[in-house]
Length: 384
Image (cartoon, rainbow, N blue to C red; front, top):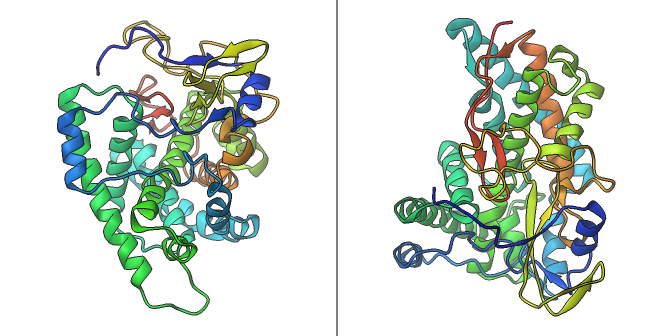
């Protein structure tokens, strides 16, 4: 990873200010939300161009009048009723994963909960909710992490080229899935997101652009939220014990605490669309802004590798924000917020119930630390 010595963004941490920025999209545009933090090299761009890789603004980075109607199409797949109806399926998958993890713990004496219980249920649920085939999950998980690093990390030129190739592979796979989904025979009572977007008038590159980050954000950030929650529970540092979290109320309590203090998406970006004022300060058009959504930081310019800062230590305020900003706010708020919270609560319940009294086998794992994503890469537990 290349060294970052100065922060290239205006960093906003006050919750009131952050919420104001998110609610003023005409002044603070999301146009930079999905741009690569580290500019892509010519070699990397050529790899992507060969795969016809294109990310026109469609949803998260769309600040045009078309955003509202496209968002409405996607929101139709994540209505409160549809999310609630998925709870039995979420619980089934979580229970199966937890039971398998308990077996692995018994036979091997340790188990990594990231791979055992956090990784796959969110991916299965997301694909099922979107009406897409559940397949190639190991590749989807690997592609997701690589794409997050490519767009939100600080890879050197050699690593960037590797990541560009996997992004191109992901995009090729996605394009084939889009074409397959749009052209599939219509089944009465069934629909899929890609066909719905095509029916709305989106082109194949636009559908691929939306699908590229949705298939990542719709499951990988939930995997990361589950991972951090299970790590903090096993660590015993958040006032709720591992065994207590098998109850719905306690599980929801620890999940919301993690969402407020160190969610998987702690920051997000905006750019000033025009000269404007914020808290009496003049902001010039084009100034890039990093808003803190939750209370934990781990960026190279804040702590740095080898600084001695704990992987989970906050460098600023902790505690919940007044507005629950973990999923954003305003017209670009995460559409999967309720689903992510439900999935995490259920996985935590089922995992703590199936693996009684475990403790951390590795209290200092490597953490994923990107500009806008964070989580322990492993959560290894052993019998208590």
